[in-house]
Picture 1 (tube, rainbow, N blue to C red):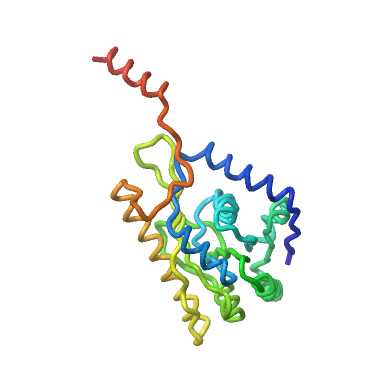
Picture 2: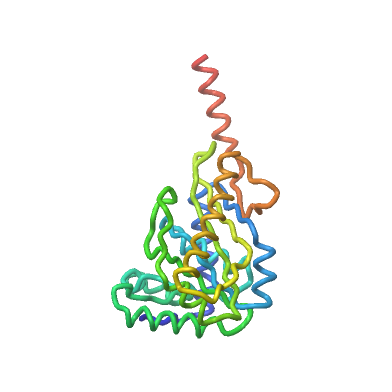
Length: 241
């Protein structure tokens, strides 16, 4: 297992860099549940369980951590973290999913992080990036962490990147209400996480189909329409007409 080794000044800079990277790549970032999750995190440590769909997911987590005013950490594949070692300076810790002992160590490490309000740990229990069109299949690590830290609150998160009427795709994030950690089997806890993530993805699906953000989503950023692009389109229409 690779432990996180945060450098506060680097983290502050890199979170700003992550946001600029997202702003340069995407048309908008729409987030549901920010205020509610921020209030929850002020009272409890939170474990965020999310689907894992594309390369920007870690950058989205960094930006969300700042928006939620939390000390954010995230579980990451050890091979990827060894290749992108700077992520451990902003809160990533690595696990080798092929080694059960390493997995157990990562679970204990996550439990140790969730020791105070204002702390948040993100886990992507799919274990690897998968398209949102595929059925959600989760590994059991997040369930084990949840069972070990009953004082933490488990927040389901859905994330999706979607083209609409804009040249660039938009980021959609939905943060749900806390999931009760049932005191039964790990399979039941994992299923509650899967159902929670699926629900948040369903909320996003409704907004994407409606092509409307809705009052329950906040626009973290949104690119203004390009005046030059609009003028060029009108000029081309005039010439072609």
